[in-house]
Image (tube, rainbow, N blue to C red; front, side, top):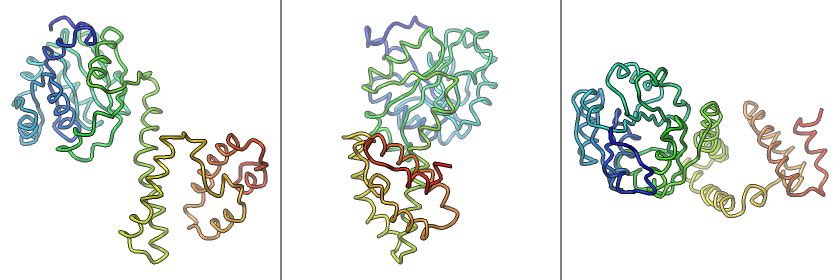
Length: 298
């Protein structure tokens, strides 16, 4: 492998380095396309599903590999873009190959680079590089990646160069402690997947009021979008609104009477978190009755 130099200092080196992908799903498609349109040399794809890898290769104007060893041979950096539970299987499959000088990356949000156990014995270098973005479409997601943050952790030797690779695309990078990957992933899932679940709950409450599902979501969308906009512009504290912030115990009591029993616990927990934020915004208010009602004071 040619010697890696700081990409920010010598940006043309990025074009010379060759990046291959093992896995041709939505993440592999999207990152490969994003790299290729930004003049990064994508060698191609290998996947157990040859149709997917051929499709990804065509989409990125790269090469389809029939065998995994040839992709590794042709690539300086190998991105493993498989589901999380397949990453270890891929590593076990390739760890016996000549990997000296290679850089191996996976894109899992929950796994650390430690999944590549024993990689030091191979002379290769391990990293996890996770795009903090929902990959819902393999053909169009790449168009929106320019505003995406990436997280990275792994071997210190080439950590600055790998960060520069992403930075030079115009993307911010968070450096993560590998031991904190599960907590880091929880943060991503909370604001992405769990928020979708919460929004679905709110929409279903409107459906129970006799509103059809399409109108329920459409009617809530301005509220959702403006809350996100307020959060982006003002931060958590100043974006606060609603009965908890107003210290409106009567409204919360009505909510408790109306809410399905199975949803009561999460309503209380989320309201208590809002209460903690409200205390920071209105230090002069006495929220003790409301806090006791929510079960925050024994």
